Image (cartoon, rainbow, N blue to C red; front, side, top):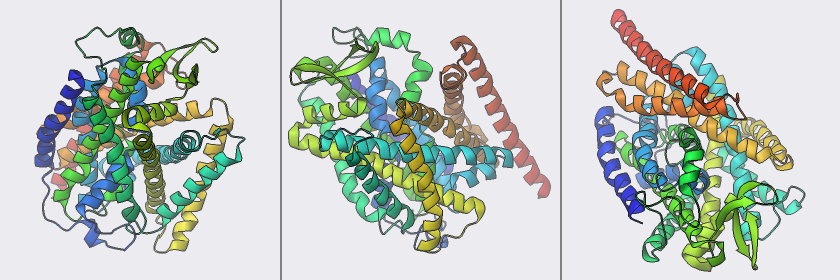
Length: 514
């Protein structure tokens, strides 16, 4: 428990200090924001700070800060320290600067921001990359809440051949279409406060349950191999870098978030709101991730025999799996089912059901804005006007058709979702590299070169994470780990050097023009 509480202190105190530094470096002022300068009643709409905060939190908090920590905590108590440190130096910094730069540049969407501060070639690569990622996000965030709803709330099979599964998916799709097309303050701005209350209840409920029920956790200074699970062995065998950081994306650093902060850059009333809306909401996601990581560790320590879970070898498949005691029989369950175990053990039957509703809401409230962001990016890239519902529907429908095709494939292919999730997780982190390079160049161009160490730290680290992972992975190039690490270090150095060179070149060009 002490390590968990220490991690919470690091998150709150460290986040407060580093957040102030980020705000000082950026320098928000009282200039007119895009919400007023370009107000159109659809996407550029001034909204209250509390509403923007809740919308941004729900936009970025999908299944990542839940399913990621559920699997990441198997690496041991180091996760409870790594999450807050990574959140402060990486994720919260990334979200703040992406949101603030997009705001200052007139409400740019991320592809346009990347083009402005890199070059056309990088922009083209990023545009294809982010479009594919947002389609994957849309598919993942229909699949996971749909399956949790089917299996955990209604007790359905959730199988591809069950019509009830597709009815649930269809309901989610209809909501997504409405939220994607209609004005942001009419749909998203109205329902998100309700969703936000459920989200806060689920995370805070698990937090207080951990404290007041004194649930068993492993401290970082304790023996990591316990009778319930050998965290130490898993850590040494599992290649903590990069596997942990790809697994636990949301909560530490997520490139997807930049597409969502860009949306909110069009609705904040003043730049001074950015600290709360962008930086602090990412800290809140870090808190959610820590609660789910600790809650899962507690369930493992309690064991399935006593109402928790086991993580052990499945003798029928030879694969390490989660087990729950169902009607006196040890039954293999998925990571999404672990969500239900944590909720109901910590909060009881009624509270657990409400918390489970929050878990279903999380991905839905990220999926709708992911597809909204994709619509806006396509519209901006091809200069397609979006000034009435007919034009927005015309662009949204083909996007939804592609998302549905991905969902159908992943549902009917036995390994479809596993492959989909791996590509989603890796591409999510890789997308952040584009944004971090752009932030470095922006700093150099805006006379903040002495602070480029701030984006350089996460850029160097996540270059190693993303490149070494895809070089070694079965879904990538399947190279040996030593070769993968060497390549990743080279890429990290090249990205930093090219970013600095580009920034310096832009400054020299500006001086020559003046």
